[in-house]
Length: 390
Ligand SMILES: Cc1ncc(COP(=O)(O)O)c(C=O)c1O
Image 1 (cartoon, rainbow, N blue to C red):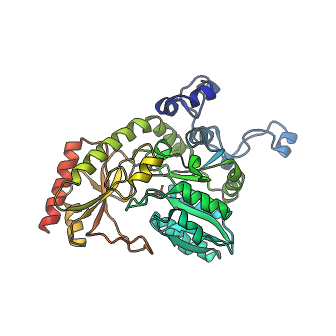
Image 2 (image 1 turned 90 degrees about the vertical axis):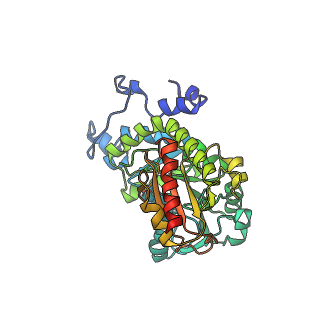
Image 3 (image 1 turned 60 degrees about the horizontal axis):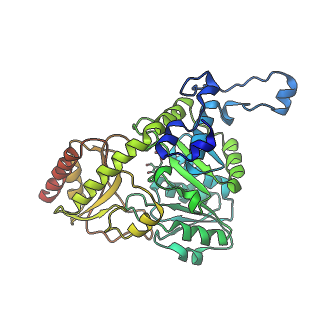
C-alpha cells in the first residue's frame, strides 16, 4: 500500500499495515526476523565506503527498520531507535543530549528508575539535576537556567497521574534553548502524539502496551528532524541495540494494540467510575475522570486513556494496603503494566521532592487487564473489604 494513502487512513488500518511492505520479502505478510552481527559486502570498494543499506547488526536490520518505520508513522517522527528496555529508552536520549556542566529539569512524578539514573549516573557525570512540580506549566520558564539543556516530562505521571501542560512547557523550554523529552508510555502514540505538541523526543517502554503480553522488554525513542542525528549517533556509539526476536514481538503486538487499548480504556474507565462510589476509596486518580484536577488538560490534548490508574484508600497505611493486595485473586502483584492481565502494586512516594501529595491514605496502582469487568470489580471489592477489616 502507498505510504501516503495509508497515512490518511484510520488508526486501526494504519496499525495493521504500517512498518513493512510484504512485497519486499516475497509477499510474506510479516517481515523476517533477521539474526545478524555480520553483513557481507560484495567487494572491497563497497566495504571501504560502506555503500549499502545494512553494514553491521548493531546498526539496524530489516526487522528493526520495520518497527522503527511503524513508530515513525505513529509518532510523526524523523527517526526511531529501538533499544533493549523502556529504561534504556530513557537513559540513552538523556546521555545523548546532556554533557558535564549542563542542567536538566525532570518532572518530580517521574518513573522512579529515571530518577535513580539522574541521581546517580547523571550527577556523577557532572550534570546538575533538578526536579519540578508536574503542575508547573508555563511557570517552568522561571526554573530555566542558561545551561538548561533538557526538560524531561512524563504525562500523566507515574503512579499519581498528574497531567502536564506539555505545549506550555515545550514553549518555555524551547525559548531557553532546551530539548524537550517525554516518556509517553501511558498514552502510547495512539492517544497522544508528543511531537505535535512541541516535544522533540518521545520515549516508550514498548514493554507495556505495544508488547502487550508481559513477556518482552523493549524501548523505542522517536525524535523530530532537529534531534534525530544526535540521538542516532549516541545509539550507535553506545551499542545498545535490541534483540531481533523481541523487536519482532513488539511489531506483532502493534497489530492488535488498537483493539487491546480500546478494551483496556473502556474497562478501566468503567471500574474507575465505579470506584468513585465505593466506600473505603478516598480518591480515584484517573485523568479521564471529570473529578481529576488534570482532566481539562487530558481532554484538550489526549484522545484516549489506557488501562492504568490509581486509587487512594480512605485512611490507613501499609497494613491496609497489604490487606487489600493480599485479598486479590485475579490481580497479580507486579511492578509492570500494559499486559493482558490485571496487576496491582502499593505505590511509594518516598523518593518525591515536590509532588508528595497530601493523600488521605495508601495509594494502590491498578492495571486493568482484558478480563471481564464484573470479575475485576468483584476482585477489587475483596481488596476493599479486606482493607477496611484490617
Ligand atoms: C513510565 C515508564 N517508563 C519506562 C518504564 C521502563 O520500562 P522497562 O520495564 O521496559 O525498562 C516503565 C516501566 O515500568 C514505566 O512505567
